[in-house]
Each structure stands twice: as structure tokens, then as C-alpha cells.
Image 1 (cartoon, rainbow, N blue to C red):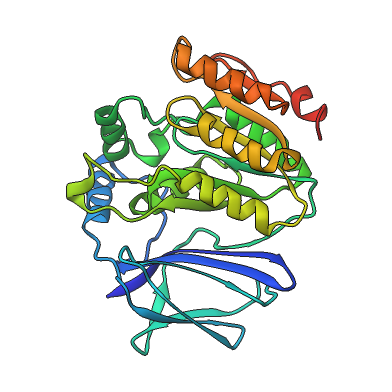
Image 2: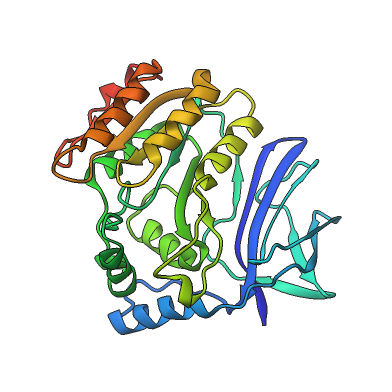
Length: 308
């Protein structure tokens, strides 16, 4: 049985709605607060044995309007439609004349806010401790740490909590694979982090887990799409120094300098390497305010007050 594993609907304005999703084998996901370690391990492993709905024609019906597109080799799809919608809008997705269940319990509809800014954030080692510097430790953390045991980053958690008074949209742009969609959604919900659209990399098979072949341009393309489709909206960017966030954000700033209000970068390790410091200096040279915070720093609200 194939299901819509992940769905995102973003209503940018009355004439523009963006729809993205992923279709694969699976069943309905019911969020549970106290899943044991063995159940968590089994559910996570199972997510790497899903069969994508590859290169199939699908019909998306939004408020009785039909839109046709095709999934890619990983079961992913995306389409922009010239239509307005809201939370009461009805959407169905079908393939081969069969209705596909939309199984996610996490919100999938997002309407662009009236806030002066929106937030784009990485996930791993930015809002959740994930140990991305150590591939083996990251896998162990993913497989064995249950939702209630996953640790958040205190600084970023305080930052996100503070921004909620401005009612921005939140977009989580991560290199984590879509296999982990439910796990990430449950963790965000469990820790009462702001709910936002999750943009993840394509589904992986179990034999790709140790050597995932992920696009280095994934984050840049997603962020560029969000900025270009959201009118004159400004953004706060949040990331860390373990992967490519500073390099990606540098390219974003060079292309959309006037749209970026502030950049937060988390220093994950105890010291900054020469490469990390040079990456930070390159960001600072672009003239956008940068806060490269240390592991034990506490969030200072004045940083945002001064630029918003």
C-alpha cells in the first residue's frame, strides 16, 4: 500500500500555492509520547525499507481543481498552482485511479504570515543535538535515542521561543532524509518547538545509510525558492558550523542580501577551526549581522530587537 508519507502546502498569496510531498509504502503514523527504545529502533529501521512510488503520474485535487504531475525516482513531487487556499481547504492525492492516504499527523498547511520576518533553520546540531561530526555517533543517536531522550540546543530553543511573539513562519531546511520525517516531527512536537514546514532530502534505502549521496545544493535551492516566492519577506537564518551552513548562508546573502536580517551560527565544538573562522569572517564581510555563539552562550533578545 502506498501513502503520502510527507506533505507540505504553503500558501504564499492569493494566486500562489506551493505543494510538495513524498509517496512511498507505509501506513498511518500515530504519535506516541512514550515509545520504548526497542520500538523506536524498529520503527526507525523500518523507515529505510520503504518502497518509493517512483516516476508515477499523480492527480492532486485542491478545492475541486485537478493538477497533474509526476513523482521522481524517490517518490517525491512538487508543484506550484495558481490558487488560494486555507486550513479548511480540501486536498486529495491519487495515483493509478486510487486515492492515497495522507498519513502524517504533523501539520502540512502553512500560510505566509504578516510578520516582518520569517525564520529558516537547520535541524541537526542547530536545534537538536545530533552529533553530525561523527557519522557513527549520529546513526547511533538516531536509532537508539527516543523522542523524549533527544536533547535540544538551549540557545536555539530560547531563540525560537522568543521569536514566536512576532508570529513568523518557520521553515526547517535540513540534510536529514525523509525517512526520518515522523521522528523529527515527533521530536519537534514533544519539545514544544515551533511547528514549521520541514524540507528534507530524498528517501534513502538501508544500504545507503552509511554512505548517503546527498546533494550539497539542497539547502541553497530550498532557501532560494522560499525567498523568491515570498514577496518582500525578510528572514532570520539559523545554522551551525558542523556541515555547510555557513557556506550556504554566504551564497544566500550574496544573492539576497537585502532580505536577510540576521544570521545565527552555533559553534558545536569546543574550539573554532581556522576554516570555520574564515567562513564566519566571510559572512561578516557581507555586512549582514552575524552571531556566532559558543556552546555555553545564552540567547540575548537584544540581538533581534536591534534589527527587527
